[in-house]
Length: 308
Image (tube, rainbow, N blue to C red):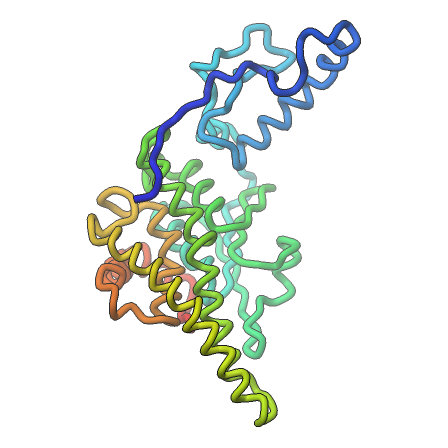
C-alpha cells in the first residue's frame, strides 16, 4: 500500500521562515513592504499546486482580523473561489495519447465541454505544431477553462474534480485515502510510465533501419537493455499493481476515482507493450474500466484509441 500518513503541520507561525520580528525598524519596514507580495505568491501557489491546507493563517494586508490556523483555507475552496469561466471547458485532444483519460473524466463528470482534435504525424508519431500555440511544449492533454490553461494529466484531474466534481471521484480531503489518491496520480507518470517508455524505445531500436552490419549490434543492445533492466523493473511494478488491485479492484476504495483514470493509460500501454498475461488483476481492471459508460462515451468522442 502507498504511504498514508495523515501528519499535519498547520501550526507554522505566519512568515516565521521569512523574516525575524527582532531585526529593528528598518527590517520591520522591509517586512511590511514584502507582506503583500508574500501573501499573493502563497495564495497563487496553493491555489494551483499547494498542499491541501495552507501552512499559515490566511491573511492579507487589508484584513484586520486574520483567519486562525484552524480555519485555514483548502485548495478545494480556492479553486471553487475562482471566477466563473467566460468560455466553456476545452480539451485539446491528441489521438492515442494521455488525453484519452481526461476525456473519460469529463464524460464521467457530465460537465459541458468542447473538444479540439489533433492528429499525430503518421511518420514521426509526434504531435502537430499547432499544439504549441496552446502551450509552449505542444503536448497533450491541455485543458483550457476561460483564461486558464492547464497541462499535465495529474494536475488536470485534480483541478476538474476539485472544481466540478461535487465530491465525486476523489476521497474526502484530509483522509488517508486522499493521500493514496494523490500517490497514484504521481506514481503513474513518475514511476510507471518511464519504464513503459523505455520498453517502447528499445523495441524500436531493435527494428531501426540501419546498414546490415549494424543490425545485430542494435538487436543486442536492445535485448541487453530489456533483459537486464527494463523487463525486471517492469515486472516488479506490474506485480505490485496486480497485488494492489487484487484487493478491491480499484486503486483507491471500492469504486472508480480519478486515480483509476490516471492509472488507466500506463496500464493500457503496458498491455500493448509488455502483455498482462501474468497479471490477471490488471487485465480485469482494464475489462472493468472499458465497460464504464463514461469510458465508452470518451472513445466515441475522441476517436480510435490504440497504443503500440
